[in-house]
Length: 190
Image (tube, rainbow, N blue to C red; front, side, top):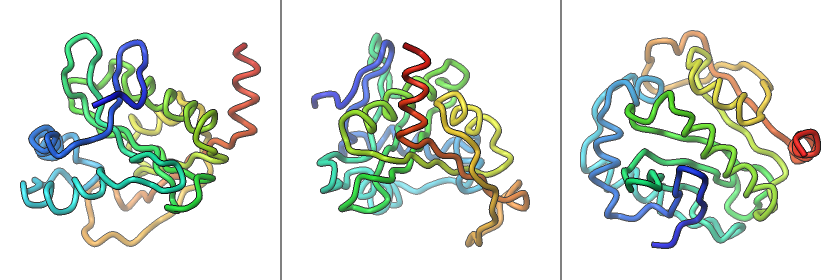
């Protein structure tokens, strides 16, 4: 499968059904899933019936999947996935940024590297006007990636979750980056 995007160290390509074993391992690491579902295990059926259909969906407004499997360029090792998906199937103006990486990839700058590359591609090639990202308020690692990617804090909020997980009592946070702010940053860095 052809890559959607490459960086110095990463290859981001569309997810395929063949990624199911890697997705299963990723979603069954309690630390990876700590801020997603409290670290509870995910079944193979859940990967097949819920996760894969979501990751394989193509968005008509961009002609892209919105989710990409990430591999190290040098070894081909699966690192996880990134998301830059339109909130509306038919309008690329507002997209959600997300990422889920295996623990071996943490602390190496991969999350920021992939997120920056996707944000840049969204603004330059996909018609994006605003990038948004959300996480639990206590998820300082993910918040730091958002900030290093150029997103700024927009708001804190609370949401109703089907099951309470540790830290959810502190609520959620939303970050954003507008096209205008991205263009200003790009001009300053030039």
